[in-house]
Image (cartoon, rainbow, N blue to C red; front, side, top):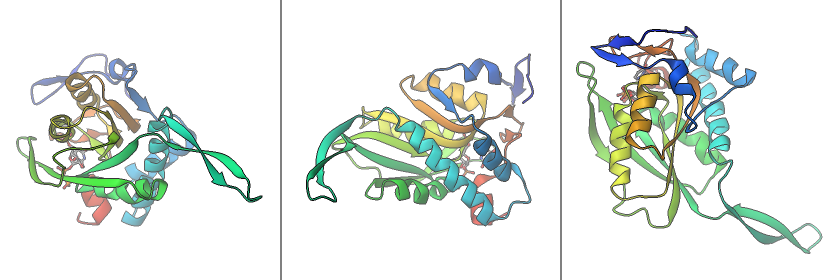
Length: 233
Ligand code: PRP
Ligand code: URA
């Protein structure tokens, strides 16, 4: 990645450098040859949508494994193959998903393949291409999250951070548990905005990219994640 010594403006706003953001202990970026290979599939504009979806699937699962590394567990017994009680574990608190539509939908099947009975919420947020301001057009967030203790917000792209911030604001009005943002690519600007808004948030990314261009797209990036996933290019 390029080392931008000077902050790069994006529509007059200065962008922090990648190096200044990657030090944050709440940001976790995959560092593995398999991860960079899968990210390469995402970046490759020749990858067909089924390959793009497959790479999102694999990376989502790795990121969720990481996000749940320190998830509290409790012991319980199962009836083992000998018929004797055999010690096992399960999560102590309920975990739920919140997918930001539409691109976050591509991360739901791999997440649910890991935790099949997971409660899954959705929030529809679309970024205005001119102003880059997010607009919420649908939500099935509950009044109360009940006994859910950890919410995983799914969206492949963290660009200006506006969409994720809007989702976070709506969740925080009614939830004080752990929140992890799970995404593919992030720009330093969006990461800094989001962690500045909620310092308890944890962010898990497949890659931290260099910067945003003047259209608010991540560079080197992958283009429009929703269009790539759903073939609407
Ligand atoms: C994309 C992406 C994020 C958002 C990121 O969605 O999936 O939700 O942009 O940009 P931001 O960090 O600057 O808010 P988009 O608004 O294009 O909607 P879509 O998923 O329906 O295509
Ligand atoms: N949304 C995308 O899908 N891609 C970007 O690079 C930025 C926002």
